[in-house]
Length: 90
Image 1: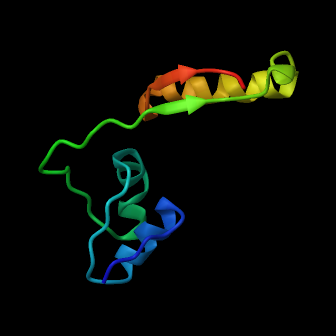
Image 2: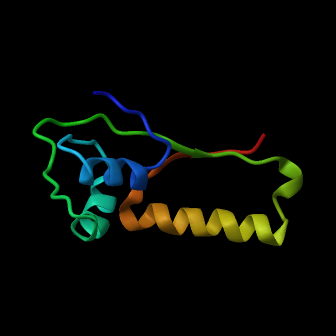
């Protein structure tokens, strides 16, 4: 059986309720896997890096809510979720 689901949480619940395996982000597995009744193992092969990009319209450059959201995303990325490849505007 192959399943593609929209969220990592749903993938983990699917694995927890079956005899199947799933591929989810390590950070999610470490933080939530045990609570959902699944064990996690590191991949036995290296996976390619994924680029993360932020884009926004130039008119939103100075919008306080947009600046806050971009700052929050950058902080999350700096904590090891990923590294941004580029930051650009439309």
